[in-house]
Picture 1: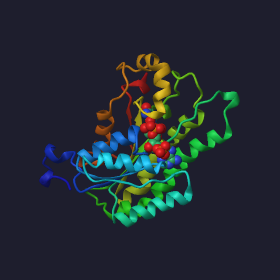
Picture 2: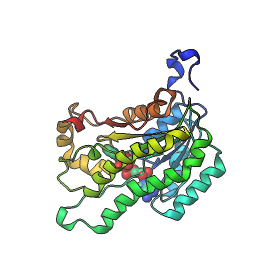
Picture 3: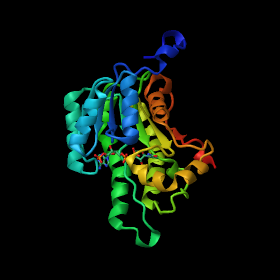
Picture 4: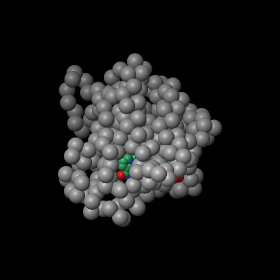
Length: 267
Ligand SMILES: NC(=O)c1ccc[n+]([C@@H]2O[C@H](COP(=O)([O-])OP(=O)(O)OC[C@H]3O[C@@H](n4cnc5c(N)ncnc54)[C@H](OP(=O)(O)O)[C@@H]3O)[C@@H](O)[C@H]2O)c1
């Protein structure tokens, strides 16, 4: 709820106490950074990923920070996604924050780019994101108010803002899927605003994760030189933007695509 009388109360501005969040792909990398941040800000967090044992272990580990629960699912599988929605609805009657973070990348030369890799990336990064959001809309609107809307936070990429050049490998479906996520975020913002749900996207630059491990091993110097700030992002910088968007501080931000890339996308 907002501070009374339009006053500014920074002590509680970023507080997520009483909020429930689902972070897809929360078992590692950027999703885990966000889950950790939300738990420290006071939220109850559900994390989801395909490998059930890993998801369970990470949720148990994160429970030292606050209530964290594992709901494993393959989001690219329609039946599994429906199972996740049903399982979440059994555990909570409202969802305040949905972080659509699970994603995959595929790099290959133009001439030999595999069709199954192309489809796989679009299926998870774009199609699954839309249908999970749609199917969780009832749960999101259940706890949403004009003053304190529910939040959909999509993880896009700076690659969806600007064509990447540092990796020297084509990532055609990946960058196209992320540009589509950015654009769809704006369409969702319009669709969902009357239901008191905002939709925003974060467009990260490089952060350490399994997805970026190989690229950082091979091209770290190029990646850092390509960034005006000369370095990759830190976990707190991802947690920070995600907490902002989920908290009272971000309640009026809607339809935004926020680069968190040290300025790389404006070069
Ligand atoms: N790291 C970066 O520098 C960077 C930059 C820009 C954008 N991003 C975006 O940030 C998001 C997270 O990336 P990351 O770097 O943290 O990647 P990551 O380390 O590979 O983590 C991906 C997460 O998604 C889960 N996942 C993968 N496929 C899934 C599926 N079909 N269903 C459910 N969960 C699935 C993974 O767990 P399982 O394998 O067990 O399913 C894991 O928890 C992605 O959308 C990525 O495009 C990352």
